[in-house]
Amino acid sequence: MSTLPSPTALAPMSVKSESFDSISDQSAHSHEASPEASASSIITPDVAPPTPQHTAPSVPNVPSIPSVPVVPTFTPTIIRRKLTSFVGFSNLPQQWHQKSIQQGFDFNLLVVGESGLGKSTLLNTMFEVPVHNLDTPHTYDSESIQIQTTNIELEESGVKLRLNVIDTPGFGDNINNLDSWKVIMEEIDQRFDQYFEAEENLSVGLSGTAKDPRVHACLFFIEPSGHTMKPLDVVTMKKLHKKVNLVPVIAKSDTLTEEELAQFKHAVLSELEAQEIDFFTPPTYLNDDEETKGEVSELISNIPFAVVGSTSLVVNKEGNAVLGREYPWGVIEVHNSEHNDFLKLRSLLISGHLEDLRDNTKKLYERYRSEKLLKLDVKQDDSVFSIPDPAVRQEEERRNHEERLAKMESEMRAVFQKKVTEKEAKLKSSEGELYSKHREIKEQLDRQRQELEQRKLQLQQQIQMEQERRARKNVVR
Image 1 (spheres, rainbow, N blue to C red):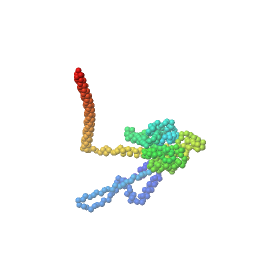
Image 2: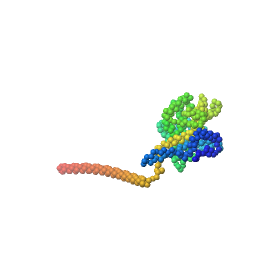
Image 3: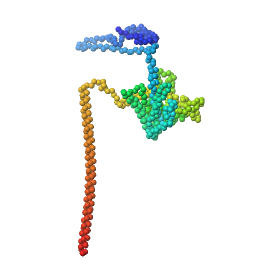
Image 4: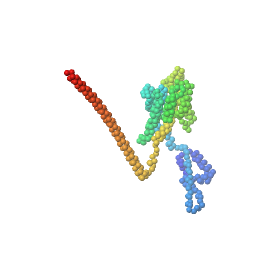
């Protein structure tokens, strides 16, 4: 009878001796505790154990029921080993790192907010290069908004980032802003569709070097009114939050006092919760240490981020030149967490959770893709796996032929009826024209007859008058 292979036969490579000791101790203990159980445990899965046969009492003219063998269940054993020699799969992270460095990364950032909230200044401050031209005025139709995309290739320590800033000039600047969100939704859906078509196109496909057009984050700028968000902002966020990673920020937070800013943050969060609007929160993982979990918790607690942007250097109270804004009452430093949440926002978008944003974009896209396929009513064609019956196929072809003939007959009838209708309409039109012309001629003849009768009457009167005049003249003579 065959026995199970020993652990050493399954793992011929070098392993730590303590693993063998632990297994051998457990095996010896189990054999000493129950020899019968040990004897039964060495049966291999491909050999069925003998099944007891129960003989039923003989019944005339009734065949005996054969017994059904019991198939034993087999649970695979997971063998865990820590290798002491080099195999090579520990280089997988390094391989992935090298591949990522060569290909670079795509980051598509959608920026939404009214004009004058410092969107361009904040982006230039965040990437420390002029990624968005502040001197170029936006040219757009006063009745609608347009999408403008700026493509920038950045490199930091050998890592390449293809940054695509998707701006929405004109948002909230019109008199009627009811449908301002539609243009933004169309842009997001269009980028999803572009990625979807690339997936479905077998000749092109999505290679590792292909650019990702999907929007990875939406930086939504909220006006620092100090009270609550505008209805347009609420409606737009409610439309966008299921399609994109929403990151709300309070623009120009230096216009509010600390107390006003705290109250405004609470009002914004309450409105988002009441409207069931989801915004992006960084995830935590099982292997994260307490410090990392604390940083993530702090980031989440500061949403919406109160930010200040500046590309100018000012001198702080320590005499150092820093990015910030100078006021009569003091200096606001951009990179000072005590003054604003700029560093927290940059950690969320770039330095700390850029890959989390990209991963969550995949989930949002899969939801969009599923909904799109359901709308398209995509179903599996069962005929691929079936063998066609000739008789059924012939009947189907006959039915299709009859349907085509019926369709052709219907189309011919429709064409004939259309021509008959056009001919009747033309005849009626001609009849009407002839009737009108006949009536005009008749009226003209009636007028001529009346004129002739009048002239005849006048002529008769003149003749009578002439006869009377001659008669009087003869009498006088």
